Amino acid sequence: MNCDDINNAIYVYLDGELAAPEEGDFEGHVSACRRCSRLLAQESGMLTAVRANAPQPKAPESLRLRVLAALDEAPAPLPAEARAQAPRTSAWLVGAGWIGAIAAVVIAMVLAFGKPAGGETDERRVLVESVAAHRENLPMEVRGSEQQVRQYLQENVPFPVEIPFDDSQAIRLTGARLTRVGGREAVLFNYDVQGERMTVVQVATPPEAEAADAETEPSFSNHQGFEVVTFRKRGIINSVVGQGQSPGKIVRASYAQ
Amino acid sequence: MIFQGRAKKEEEATRDAFNKEALPHMESLYSAALYMTRDAGLAEDLVQETFLKAFRFWHRYESGTNCKAWLFRILTNTFINGNRRKKRPHFSIDASEQDLSSSVMAETSHFYDTPEAEYLGGLFPEHVQRAIEELPENFRIPVVLADLQDFSYKEIADIMECPVGTVMSRLFRGRKRLQEVLFDYAVELGVIPAQDARDEEGAISLEAYRARRKAVGEG
Ligand SMILES: [Zn+2]
Image (cartoon, each protein chain N blue to C red):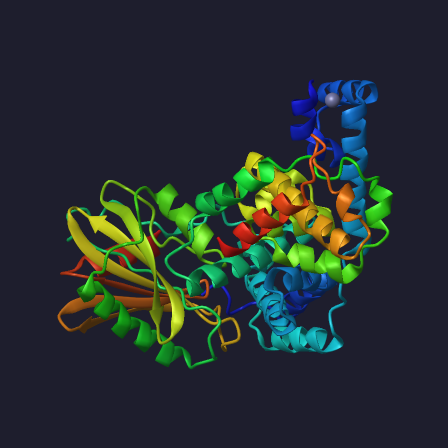
């Protein structure tokens, strides 16, 4: 190691993250080099001073009470058995039976942490807004593979998101964007089904809402000429919008699994 | 209808586990939240939101694994996303890193002529706090996670969802920047005599240093 190497590795060394052989090289150079031994003393002094002097404010008691009260109101999370359920998306997935269905955009909206609201109202609102979003067909913020979309969601959505349907030859995730529904944050996925659009809206119930992780059976309806299927699964409200019968087929297939 | 038959007992057990494993990290979360948001009210909101999300997604947490890191991942994501949403279009991480790197990389040898004990003793907690809070978000978060919360590089990489190499380079730049600011305070406080503020070649660097600081401040 030369002096430049020491410059570059100095924090890694001080953080104890340098691998053993490099650590030996590092110490060998520093013990023989006045410049680097001074640098090391300074840098470790700086880090020590930061750790020693940086205030670590205590959480106020009011915050603790507030959090406890909010947790009391929050719905219970999924039970331990459900945790073992494997990959996030696969449990959902669509069988091959509906191939030939009309294409689709999938819009997944995740409404997070808004005011408590009745489940019916939430679902109705998601249904209406999902149809509006399907019609509006704004450009996606991310396009590409499921992996890219997942990456985008991880970076932009402050909590885990369920990608509603796995990629397959029949249904392909092509993009996503963030949006708003009723003033709350939402995420929108874009799927391509055999060259056409379908819209699925997926909304996470506000955690403080009653029955936030209840499940409901799919409800099939027609809105402004589009078929819409809404249902709640794992605390997420889903609204699937598309032409013809594709939303119903996809949802039925995923439930059939 | 998986959930309907669920026994009340099980719910209580879940809440007990959450209380035991997650809630003890409130102090750490609040401290980090304050450094991130720089506002007590926002920090409290951020912590509460973090706990509610953690509870909601508790089934994703594997019992016995690193709960603190898991909670910090939620905290950090929530903070970053909250900010990002406010200031669209998304700011470019690369651009802000480049802005800093040219000034910071040239900056490695500021304290050479001053024994560290001389200025360290004169620093007050509020200076250290202000210096950390002045760091750009990209550098502030890893510095807070490493220096105030003692997370390893690997843990920080998991929390920030980025490669370990990125953690290392941001820590490097963040700490160099922190050093600059602390140096500035030390000079202001008279802990370091201005004439000792020399760079490696022995030239007085204070003016150059201040000019650079101004440029960074305006940029
Ligand atoms: Zn050297």
